[in-house]
Length: 326
Ligand SMILES: [Zn+2]
Image 1 (cartoon, rainbow, N blue to C red):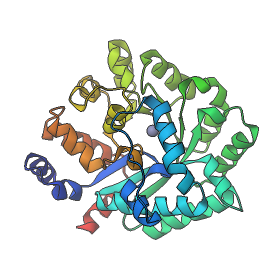
Image 2: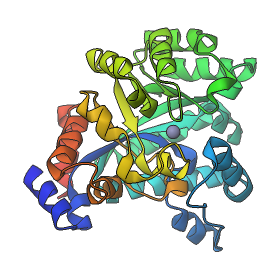
Image 3: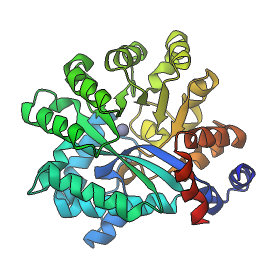
């Protein structure tokens, strides 16, 4: 199996790269399918994202002006998620940790319970093809909104969500501000994650991990600027869920060939390779692996090690999904 993946990368056989089992543990539901699928569904073409955007601000501007007007409702959301799961299955993803922003519950007349019912129906519908693990997504800018904080607490109590993630503007709230939410999520046995160190701030990565007791970090690539923080992350086995194309397009990395994921890997930090927002960044997990090989960042063997390590976190019976598909 591994030899096939390595051989597939060397011979640039994308179909064979896709056939190898993989995971995607950094995917935001709202932008999780290919832009082409949305265009087909809408019956119209949309302005493509620029190759380089001005950080998070530039991305949010593109998303709110071009994408959101077409998809900000239950029907749009449900199309995207189903289409994204199909995309992931086609790409060989056998475990998908997909993040559902708490504000999506506002698309449903029944609110959170409507969203939870829909997510459960997806898990059931796709269970023989993919292990869908819903993640509760919370934007930092919502941390002062009592209604949304209460809704997020209810979402934790629902038992539907397997992990929690915090994202958007790092300066909008301190990790301390959402500590009660994370304590509750931990008590519910959820995996704890947060976006931090996407652009700058190696020390802020350690601070956030310590305060929120994170298991994993979304991005965290700024750690590569500090030997001390890398040593600390490696010692504590904190996994960084990296999205290479996202980092290049949002300008935190100049070009793929100098992506710091190599430095992080060489310093013993567990890393995974993920999509972030397929609708905007346009690269599937298989394509991300291929891109990293083509850009000379990793050898095929190292990429295979990263892929196999990511599968180690998938329960054994779910690994069968990858075999059943062949
Ligand atoms: Zn993200």
